[in-house]
Every structure is written in structure tokens, then in C-alpha cells.
Length: 374
Image (cartoon, rainbow, N blue to C red; front, top):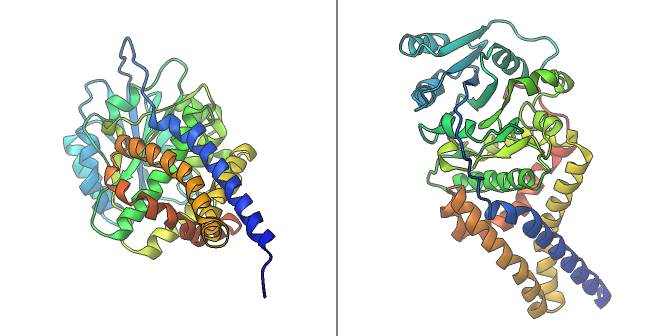
């Protein structure tokens, strides 16, 4: 069967449209993060801070990571609220041992499951309500601050108008392809939510490194509107309460948190599958913006291949080059800012990989999330 040349022309036209869409996103949104410079503050104020961590059967992670939170170089009043959520391991004994040396560590012990509230929302709500101070800083038991200045520099991002601070939750650099793919996907997500926030359209944060004022939580009745959804204590809550004037970002390397990446493909894809089930609950404007970008990236390389083979490879390559140069510029600067520069030599291959990644995670868009603690 001979395919009419008009079909290849249409495909080339679609390819050009996809390039225009991609250039728009890189030029209008992602370039903002590449060029981002935090505002210089005339006066630095240190606020009292409550760090809130939820843990379930995380004794091994608490032993490894909790010291990094407890030994922060922050002279102003602060506390660490650790919610031990129905753990069946030795978490309680580990926490009690830490409390002997660190008087600012407070444990909230939960011994019963919440009825009709799935996921981590109930223990996190208890931790936030138990917090003594207005500024709440969230992280996970499997995370460790990248520096001893994490608390100080995250809280320093607050101004009179700011109620929410979005941070970057990175992964430890380890050998192997899977680690690079996980870190690139994490970077790719971060470049979106951080850039959107700078552009005045914040839509999510990550619970591994997130801060907001306790009053924001209480004023919006906590997670009451999303209690029935297993995930979303970070992205859905921020999607509901963040706006152009009350949200700021912090990308100082001292404010990053670090986690160990998943060791197997199935564990990682299961984790991402679970996280993406919440995207269907985003505000319509966010779903449109994120959906259009993802669709354009998904179609980019198949249409590029068709245009190279069946239309005119020289023209197609030249048009693709516009997006490639802009992307390389943005990635070089943002990877440097987010301490992911070792990924830059591989960014084109990693970008192509995203086509297959979307295929693997697409079912999460329409299937119901699993009701497990995360």
C-alpha cells in the first residue's frame, strides 16, 4: 500500500506545531528557572520552625537520616515533630533513644488507624496540629537535608506575603542507569513545578521538601477536601491553596533534601504510578498546561522520525535544532542550579526515554489509586 505524500506533509506540519509548543514551554516557563535569582533581602529574620516528619516502620531510615535533621545549625527556637504512625518495628525505641540527646524532638504516637482517611494525611495532620510554631517544614523519614543550613535557608525564603515555600527533593547519586533515569525524571518534574511557581502558576510541591504556614493548613481545613484520595498530601494540597502571591521557591543547594532512589524498575514505576493517580484532581488550568506539554513531548520524537525519513531530513533537523539549542541552554543552567550537572551529557537520550516513560505511566491517569500508606 502506497501512502500518499500528503500524509507525510501533514505529519511534518504536526511536527512543526509540536516544536512551537515545546519552544513556548521552554521559552516562557522553563527559562525562568534557568535565569532565576532569589531576591536580596535587606534584613534576615529567623522564625521559630516546626519540622514535621511522618514515619511508619522506618526505624532503619530514622537511624540513618534523623541526625541530619536534629543537628541543624539553627540557633533560633525550633522543634522536630516526629509522628510514629502505627509502626510495628523498633521505631518507638529509636525515637526514644534520640529524645535522650535532643530535647527539641517531640514524638506523636499513633496507635490506631484513621477511619475513612487513606494514605499519610491523618498522621501528617496530627503532626501539623501538634506543631508549636507557625512555620512548618516537611520532609520524609527516608530523606536527609543536604546541609546543616536547611532549616535556616528554607525559612529565610519567607516574606510578609509568602505562605508557601517549595523546595527541591533530590536523590543521592549512585552508579547505574536506573539511578540516572530516576534523577532525570525528578529533575524534569522539578523544572516544571518550580518554573510554574516563578511564573505565578504554582500547582504542586513535593513532601520531601516543602514548607507552609500552619495558618494556611488550618484556614483551609487541612486535607478535609482530599481525605478520600490516598496520595496528594503534598501536590493536591498545594494545588488548592497556592497562588501567584503566596508562593515562593528555594533552590539554594543548602536547602535540598536527599533520598535513596528505588533499587528496582518495578518499585520505581509502582511509586510513580501511585503518584500520578492524583494528577486527575488538579485544577483544570493546570491539567491543560501539563497535559499539553506532556502530549507534545510524547509526540515529538515519533513525528521527528517520520519527518526525517519521509519528508525532508534537512528541514526537519533544522527545525528540531531550534528546540534542541533552547533545551540545551535551559538544561545546562538548571541542572547546574539543582546539582544535577552530571546528567547534562545524557540529556538528549534521557529526553527520548521520556516517550517510553509516558507509555509506562499513562494508565495512572484513568485508573483508581491504590490505598496504601506512602
